[in-house]
Length: 110
Length: 113
Image 1 (cartoon, each protein chain N blue to C red):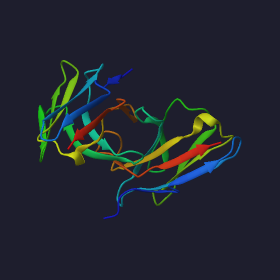
Image 2 (image 1 turned 120 degrees about the horizontal axis):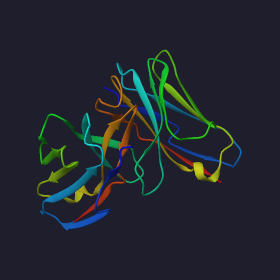
Image 3 (image 1 turned 45 degrees about the vertical axis):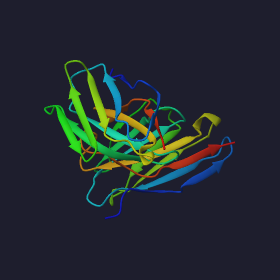
Image 4 (image 1 turned 135 degrees about the vertical axis):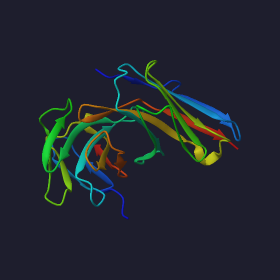
């Protein structure tokens, strides 16, 4: 059974600092890994999908790395802004579903 | 292009009632999945449909049912509502299934009193 964990559950940083968000998974035989952003009470917005054959995927200030052998992915957000405040979730496909972590709630202080 | 739409956005029901939630996927997407998210947790899988057939079912009681229509829209039905069914219900669409990029709707907030 695939278990996905995100630590820490919450993070507070001053504006301009780089953010490092962690995601770990127990079964390394993954097809890909997807990162999402969720604003309070809203749906999920896809940020990046990184295939199992990739080591990194970049989109603007976002960079996701994947290390299948160690069961870890990291999402880096450069030069954080107050608008980056949200909950960030990672998920891996598992049978017919996505298995999600509980998320890391980020607060960027102005 | 329109994204995934869900209706209604909010719903208040009482215990024992029945509810129907609706989802319209992105045009061209044939897969629809339903998730339940309670506060502070990640979404939990309920159902996945592809080409009108149920492909997967999560660990939810038989009170939960769903279907997908010929236009690929979907309904989630919950019977005999319990207080614990209060949650944000999310619909996700994709071209084929969970290995594709998943696009989520805004969700339906269900409150059971």
